[in-house]
Structure formats: C-alpha cells, structure tokens
Length: 97
Image 1 (cartoon, rainbow, N blue to C red):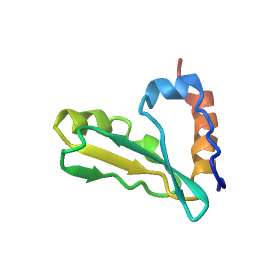
Image 2 (spheres, helix red, strand yellow):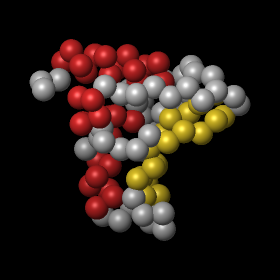
Image 3 (cartoon, helix red, strand yellow):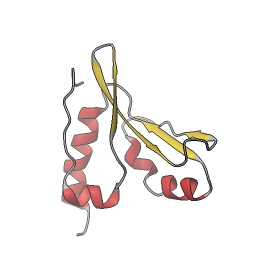
C-alpha cells in the first residue's frame, strides 16, 4: 500500500497494452489508482476486479464500452498497487514485444 502522493510509472511495454490515463484519489491517507474513461455525461460502467488482478484485466473492455457511449471507471483496490506493479514486472517477462 502506498501512502501519500506516490506515483509509479508503468513500463513502456505495459503502457502500450494499457494506454489509459492514470488517475489518483487519496483515501484515508492512502493513494488509490483508478481509470476514468469516456464521456462525463455517459452512463457509468463500474468495473471491479478480483483478486489478485488489477484494472489491467479490463484493458480490452474499456475501449469498447467507451465507444458504446459509457463512462468507464475501473478502480484498483487499496493495497493492490503493489500487486499492480508486480504484475507489470511479470508482464515484462511474458509479453512478446
């Protein structure tokens, strides 16, 4: 879990697969990462991931939902930021560039 305003950058090869703007909210002194894409006046589609995943799991759904007019919000649960960056390291080893 990250306290305060820590912002870690995803590796370039992961950003290619997950090109969404990272947004952050502070909750109880902890930093929560989330994705918020699509029209602000669109119906909200809230995408909640399971364990041990993060919002990356929705990388192919987000553009399709946005194209359909939805506002898509995909938060990463508090405490999952470390899992997110561990997953990014794993992707680096497994994704064909």
